[in-house]
Image 1 (cartoon, one colour):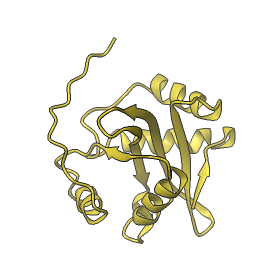
Image 2: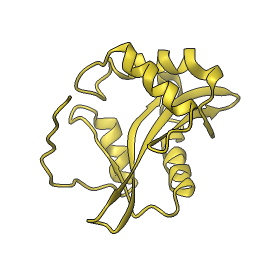
Image 3: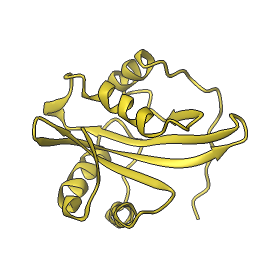
Image 4: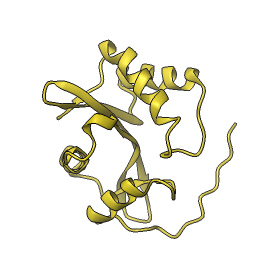
Length: 145
């Protein structure tokens, strides 16, 4: 179901990412330059991120991006599920649950899996709760440079 993103996936990855960034899953869109930079990093084996295409019945059903970090709070590796996108026609088929299982299998050494979800993305919240994810009561703060 999951396979590494490769150079031949660029067009489809960019199309899906644009769709993701215009959905209720995110708070705002991002410039195409960021999408292309991320893709270039994924296919050039950055140690900070992993990208996978989600395949189902011989076709591409979506993609998932992971960011790898370390946390003193949990004493080890943390896998951030940065983005998970499943095309509309593939939703409701149990793909998300299988993808999360594969992510865990690929990262057996992780101490925590973490993700963000918008309050409006109720379908995703239900999936994450059914998989055992819980709210983490931190106020998230950022600064972009």
